[in-house]
Amino acid sequence: MTEPPSPLPVFTSSPLLAMRGIRKSFAGTEVLHGVDLALQSGEVLALLGENGAGKSTLMKILNGDYTKDAGEILLDGLLMDFRSPRDAQRAGIRVIYQELNDAADLSVTENVLLGQLPRRGNSFPFSTMVDWTKARARTAEVLSSLRADFSPDTPMRRLSVGQRQIVEIAKALSATTKARVLVMDEPTAALTPREVEVLFKTITSLRAQGVGIIYISHRLEEVRQIAQRVMLLRDGNVAGIVAADVSRRDIVRMMVGRDLEAQREGEAPAEPFALSDESARQPATSSVEPEPRPPDAPALETLHISSGRAFRNVSFQLRPREILGMFGLLGAGHLQVTRALFGIRSIDSGKVLINGQRVHVDSPRAAQRHGIGLVSEDRKLEGLVPMMSVGDNLLFSHWRAVSSGGVVSKQLHRTRAEHWINRIGVRLKTGVQQPIATLSGGNQQKVILARWLEAGVKILLLNEPTRGVDVGARKDIYALIDELRREGLAVIVCSSDLEEILEVSDRVLVFAKGNVVAELAGATATEETLLAAASV
Ligand code: ADP
Ligand code: MG
Image (cartoon, rainbow, N blue to C red; front, side, top):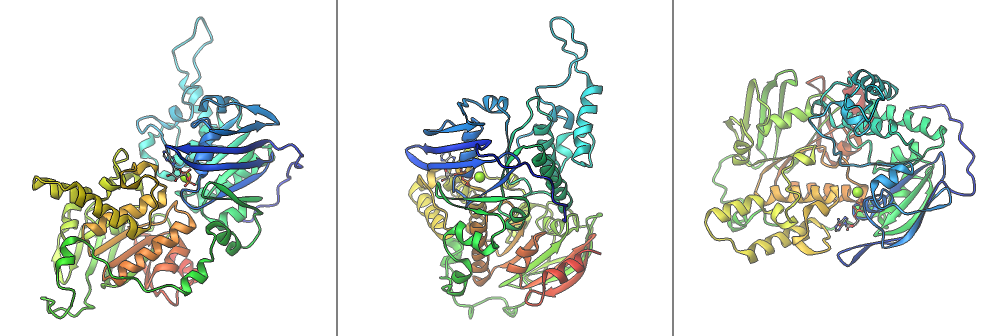
């Protein structure tokens, strides 16, 4: 995107927003240790930090969702005391959360104008008749300013995650109190490149109007492009503030407090670990392998599979200890291939072979029976139960199996859960009993991975495995995937993220418009070759 430089307001000495010495504890554990933040009018301040650093908590305090234990918030130099999101909104603060909580049954118009639908007439005492013509027109206007490609009448549930994000932004822009400070918590995590472009144009125009923007993102390229300053949070402290045009490597280093590249080079070999109790009891040598198949025979093979208009004629082989990347732009069909292999999308023609045997996977249950697991791109659909603990979520399938036998060993349960938590490197404040909902996206993702391993899958399908996950946790997840590969799993990573595909894949299938258009060796693939192949 080559945007002409926009005229920027001159920064004045008194910031638009100042947060000073903010402290916050949960259940006796302090997670923000006196954080200072200053935001100028017309500025985009990127807020970076590994998962769990305290970014969302800080923003929830700004939004009046949480009360701070100490510190002060000043808007235009005036002391504020937000006791609820309403207070914050009245002062012109709008937070667009990462987790979109829009009502699926409402239309776009109802959602955008929630609580402020125009009424017909202005007569006594108040009219209950909504002026839908006016409401629709107002919504259409905001949507068109955002260049949205859906109508005000569309039900929310028909929108993509990216489109729902646009609705959230429209909602913030059409509020009665004009936003002065806009907080975006990972706004582009689910957006298409075109939607990102629209969002950036919107941000640029908001800046010109003097709106200050706090922008939480894990995509460094994007941060460098849109922000003027970057503030790094680490473990509840401000770890640094830098101009957004410093090198990517410097930002990463400050973020995680270590040099990732250096760490990779000095990497220790992974220790073997049991995938489940069952596999641990099996002999570890391959000499007693009952099947005559050679060890590198494909674990999974497809022959000309097609599914509706999503993909056609897809053939590939996937071997144990291999990571096959599937790359494509939005709608290229690659994400549907894994869904079909997991039984949540039907295959109209072609064959699927697992360990050389033809199988019909027509449901997730069938997929699991064949040792296939899928981590979908929408973590909300993962079946994590927010009310349950990390441990119970982790051992959900196990729990069912154990409890059907009538006896549940609490001790065994806890020990296994702890084993996995250590294995995947998730730090918990209150142990495996901690509610899963308190974990960051990256850590939830690790729990989802561990759950499949606990279930003993041999073929793991990952759709956008690090969408919305920060750089540090991303590297952890890649390391985990690599380790699983070395343990003998066959892995497919489906992604629209070039860097990700290049980082993890042994081989890459490139998809465009539902077809496999190229196959590249991971070692020789480059951003240019992948993009060139995908953009037909
Ligand atoms: P980030 O947004 O940077 O990933 P968060 O602000 O979500 O980080 O979390 C900071 C820390 O506070 C984490 O250790 C998290 O587990 C903890 N935390 C956040 N919300 C709660 C809560 N409601 N109850 C208990 N702990 C919480
Ligand atoms: Mg967060």
